[in-house]
Image (cartoon, rainbow, N blue to C red; front, top):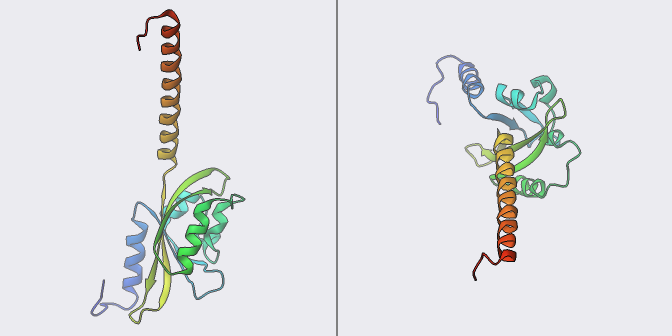
Length: 164
């Protein structure tokens, strides 16, 4: 998006903040020019997803959401993409301020200025905890069905009812 002339100095950042706060996904900006690539913006949805306020978030690297769960293979995929200034999408186990686990579908995109210099990383977070729980329930039910079917076929085989 390119703005020709700003009608009122400062209105575009204000409008963009309203737009980002109206999104259904959590959105963050981090600044790779600052030590440890800290978050410099987080929208209201990010606050709702994580339970952290903007005061808790701004100035920190988002890895604090991982809690003690640092052995996730997706973390290295994320780090490598950030090092190489590439877009990436991963699912991470993250933790809310109250300690509850949530599954974070995270998309990170590098943002460049007109000269091609990296200026920010855009993070888009989507809480997919309900989908993950539903997927686990489907897998559990499928396994239960497979076991019951196997038991039934085994019993029928013992009775001679199943012909091969």
